[in-house]
Image (cartoon, rainbow, N blue to C red; front, side):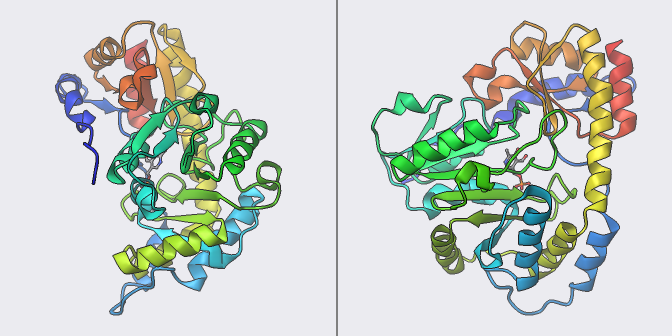
Amino acid sequence: MVSALPDFPWDRLVPYKDLAQAHPDGIVDLSVGTPVDPVPAVVRKALADASDSPGYPTTHGTERLRRAAAEWLRRRHEVEVDPVDVLPTIGSKELVAWLPTLLGVRPGDHVVFPELAYPTYDVGARLAGASPYPTDGLVSLGPERVPLVWVNSPSNPTGRVLGVGHLRKVVDWARERGAVVASDECYIGLGFEEHPVSVLHPEVCGGSHEGLLAVHSLSKRSNLAGYRAGFVTGDPALIRRLLEVRKHAGMMVPAPIQAATAAALDDDEHADRQYELYARRRAALRPALEAAGWTIEHSAAGLYLWASNGTGCWDQVRRLAELGILAAPGDFYGEAGKNHVRIGVTATDERIDAAIRRLQ
Ligand SMILES: Cc1ncc(COP(=O)(O)O)c(C=O)c1O
């Protein structure tokens, strides 16, 4: 049975959104990490070219898509996977939410994820009837059997990058007790001050993908949040198990989206351009916040600045909303975030400039 789901937290932000919207020059919404730049032309063309698609797509995806994903991992992240071990997903949130269920996690089990984390790891545990276990210290679990551990580097919300040594420790710990490590790598291409590595990198996993899954998304790399494009890859036995359940459950990606995803993975030029856009926005916004008295922690990669002015997060949200800037309160991501706000760089150059002027 599904455990009780948390309240949808974004509703609590509505009064602050109203306040920010009242600014004479309009709101600068840096609260949600939704892409605002155009979908690359090469991707839109692939989508249009594949639009005559009367038949059912396969759950396992086209060979073309699986090959493009494997190629991209090899080319950009020094990870070798067999294309047969790539499984398309309907964006990555869907997989994050259903992975515990798909893996057969049971009531009474603990699903482990970082103390400060994307809320869907918690939701996924509850959908399986299991118990969410947010922790940054695996030793606190003692000898308990744990079916699934999530890692997320670069992190949402903090932008922290886990180094090879850290990831390897998690992998070793999990292998000793038969736990699956699922690594949410949706921001892996957005390393600014540090270089993120995949859990499937040979230096992390020792060359074996046993017990490991890497979850990828095209939402941020290619502005495809609206397409719902992602994939999971890793341990061949786990991928086969996921494929079997997903086939029965109808969890398949539309064929035109598969074609568009393959085109996006093949093309690095648009991704490099998008990276530069975010790099410039970060480089402009960060010092403006610091000059206005905000401290930025972690934030070495990904799309967020993890900021604090030393007060409680809701007070910080209000202070920024009075300037017409909307940020996300840190406690959306866990109790440990109660003195921070998450400030996204997913706004147009014009809106980022507006935010900078208001902070001066
Ligand atoms: C850490 C993390 N994982 C997964 C997702 C889901 O992304 P999508 O479903 O668009 O692939 C997000 C979205 O912001 C995220 O921040």
